[in-house]
Length: 341
Image (cartoon, rainbow, N blue to C red):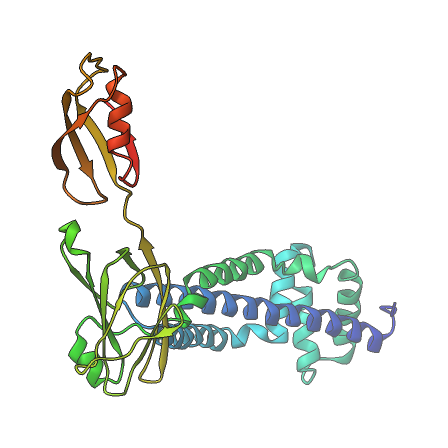
C-alpha cells in the first residue's frame, strides 16, 4: 500500500478512491436508467394492450417511451459523475472526514494558487483518513438493482406473448374492410342435421369450430386472392360462388390458405346420441292362459336429438310365459338401449 508520506503515492490513493466511487455512480445511474426504461415500457405496453393495439405497435411504443425516459435520467445526472461529486458522496457516508476529501480533490484538480506545503499536507492527511473507506459502503447499489429487476419482470409480463406473434389471421370485424386491406376474412356456416331441428349458425373468424356429426359446413373466405380450404387434410373443392361445403364426420382441423397467410382452426365434431327405447305399457309382467291372445304394447323411442316418438303395437303370446320375453323379442331391431317399465 502506498505510504501517505509520499506525496505522489498519497495523491494516487486519493484519486483511485474517487475513481472507484465515480464508476459506482455510473453503475448506479445505469441501473436507474434501466429501471426507468423497463417500468415505462411496461406501463406503455399495458396501456396499448388495453387500447387494443397490435403487438408491433406495443413493442415500438414501449421501446420509444422507455428510451426517452432513460435518456433523460442519464442526461440530468451527468454532473453527478464527476470527481467532485464522488468526493461529496464519500463525505456523506463518512462524516468523520469533515470535508477533507472534498478539499483534497479540489487541490488536486486545481493546484494553482495554493502553496505547495499546504497542498501536500492536505493530500497526506486525506490519504491517512481514507485508508478504511469502502466504496461499496459509500455508494450501495442494492435498491437500484431491485428496481431494475422489478422493471424487467413487469415488462416481461406486459409484452406480447409468443402466441400473439403467431396470430397470422386476426382481421377486423368488418369483412369488407378486411378484404380491402388484403387480409382474409373467414366465414363458417354450420347447418345441423334436419332431424335435430337445431338452428343454423354462422361464425366469423372463429378460434375453434364445434358442430354435431352430420352437420354441413359452408366455408367462405373473403379475399381477393384464391383461397384453399382443407378439412382434416383433404382439400374442399370450391363451388361457383367461391365457398366450400363439406359434411362433418370427425374431429380434426380446418386449414385455410389465403392472401399469403395460413391459419389452422381446431374442429370438434360431437357424435349424436344413440337411440333410447322405453316400453311404457304394459307396466308389469303379465301371464295369460290363452296362447292366441294379443297384448297391446306402448313404446317411446328417442333417437339422438329427435323429439320423442310414441308407437302402439301388439304382440301374440304362444305360451303361458311372461310378457316381458315377448316384448324383448319385438324390440330387438332397435339400436341403442331398451329400458323396461
